[in-house]
Image (cartoon, rainbow, N blue to C red; front, side, top):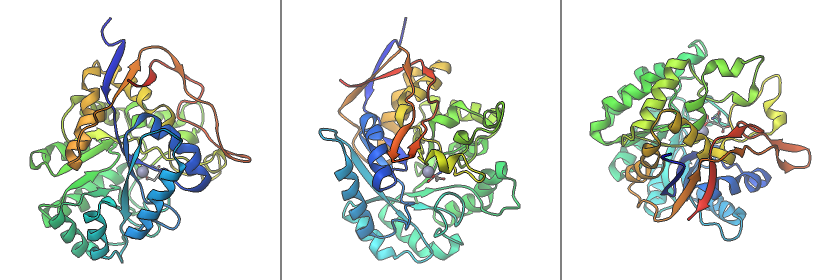
Length: 351
Ligand code: NCD
Ligand code: ZN
């Protein structure tokens, strides 16, 4: 049978939340086991806003790596109304920052310090366009009167489209896309080579009905929230097309079980423990395992102007069980996506 074993260049994860302290120590080994590099989100408390913050955070990540594991964290700056363009540009030139992240204020977890009006950071964006520094966008409007399932599509029309017109050379990644509108928008701008989009594993597998299957499933609640089935199908089509603008970004976002299973639970799915196995399932269901390498290992480095990995990893079609609770500290644990379920693929490490 074809594709019982696939060997691909070692993938990178272009969107992860590694957190800090005990949580960093608990979750980092999972990302570093599968991925050679990862774009590390800056939404710590307080956020990573300066080159000095990012340099120190990178040091803590490297110190938390298990012995003998090769993994490169690529750092990002959290944009605020007060971002210093000079510091940002220096951090980029010195190789500390790979990109900067735009969280509209209060759009998601730890985004209270985000940008209140994108017009305020126009000079910063101008500078980023000049130096070729990518802008990574959490693309949801924050207006609570806009239906939660429409916030991405409304963001694209009302904020992203005008932004690209105002800054015609700015390079942009629309993060964790969840709608057919996003896919269409990215495709419509693909020829410019300046737009990319990350797609998570969970958005390839679940639609919004899964969040309410037999009851409320807090561990499937993330932002942007999963949309209806037609959108999931559009995301699968985009990811499995192998087309350049679409690349892997898990948005693995660990929260403790206590924080997830609460009257007001946190947004985020922890997918790092079995990310490649889950992506392989989605690609196999679409009959497109031959496109997995482009999506996971080639398109991202091309967008970020980085070399592709010379390492190889293997995925095998034999059942694996998604891990159980992962202990973070006394009494605190994280529940992985599809915990306890049998997955069709197994990660066989580097070869
Ligand atoms: C992320 C988190 O927990 O930091 N949560 C999520 O649902 N994806 C924030 C984010 O990327 O929106
Ligand atoms: Zn995220």
